Image (cartoon, rainbow, N blue to C red; front, side, top):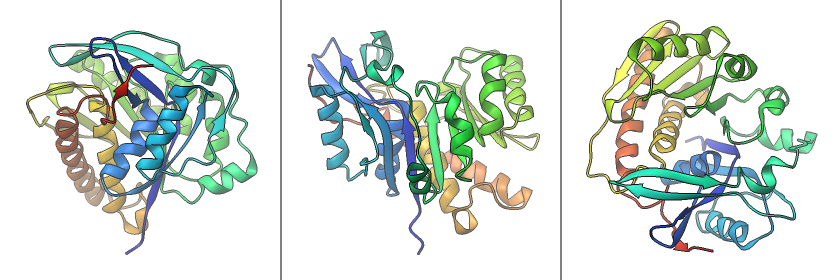
Length: 289
């Protein structure tokens, strides 16, 4: 059996749970790499680290998870962090340092970086990764790009990103049904082959070639919603790769693709429910620094 693998390129942080005095590794791109490993797919991570104890702890966890990260950048300065509390199991962000050193340093992808990235089946990144200007460069790898817009986008941002992104994930719980459909269609029209709109406990919607697919959420006794969206999208992508010929996530006849998308949405919902029973994005808590 062919061994497929994926890479998260972008943000990493620790989430500092002020009510617990604990911190947990997180960040959308880092979570993707961790969740892929939890779904038994080989993964790597390429990010920007500071040189403080927070950065050292995140790298230690990556080593424990056997996630390759040797091409990451390490800069002098503060690593990214966010301050968080929980209210009835729902995460509430109290502030952050906006990625720390990551926001100040360019990616400067080299030809060696791009050659390394070409070995993966999917690249995943996000709006918190300060990578918008580099998407055209990553596109040269001819590896499908998945992108998480979270809840923060506008028309200009979609126009900037979607032409380079194959799979767009939009968090739409705050939108009406009509507005959600409008925003998902915009992402499709601007270049994304597949668009996924998540609506929290109300499930998720996929748009593929003007076909709509709905998947209910899997409800559970929630401990912490941190990472729910990231875990959903990771399990979705992993299942799409496994269900595709030669791991080509975007290949297949329309009927075949729609079946794969539906099955992958179900996998995403099941895994997201599992992660909602874990403290932090994926555990590995340590006393807060």
